[in-house]
Image (cartoon, rainbow, N blue to C red):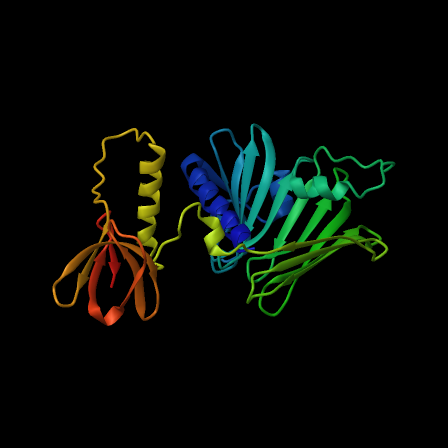
Length: 315
């Protein structure tokens, strides 16, 4: 949901900047009805009264609508997005400039496409210019999606259910206007293990699918040994080793400093060329360059370790 929130906000900001660059003039209306009828309000008559102000581009296409209160404050703002000459989206912001809802026009909207799969194939409604209304809650998460056919009649909705932590725990798909439940999803998340369970139920409340998603252990995500210290900067050695072993061609000049072994510096000033095997809480396991076998050194006897690529590994 956080991803959805960020994407929505990004769309708002991008479209707002584009609209501001395209605005040519503005007009005032007493209300939405007058806007539709193009009954304009004189600029001098807008003071000390609520009204609607609309911003247009040079082609007389409305880009932004703002609902203004008696004191001149913005109650709500609407951005209109077009594809060619066709209106495809409306974005709504509340008086705190937070996203409130979005309207998407057209039957190719993915959520509506999925919802129509559960409809009766004998349904005679039309969807070419249908609307999908996305309503957000106070936490900027999806609260409900409503699907409206070209005749202006809502034919379905999806309600999203969250727990007290703001985590999504369910979806309910309903046919409108009879509010018949045709599909339900139940989600559960184990915060400690990161495991997610998804259950799908049909209109008879029968479970028809079950899926478990779990995050693999970190070591399985690396083709080579993972960073030894937990420091993200150490990942450069993995990348450089891949470049060296696979003889990858880099499309620019680059100098990669490298020695054959890691350098271990002791507290008495002595230094050893080694191959670091493991870094533990109290000791370091390594092998001497050119020799077999593994050795153990307590950390209090080690001043520093530098990798063969010049990276500080310890401390």
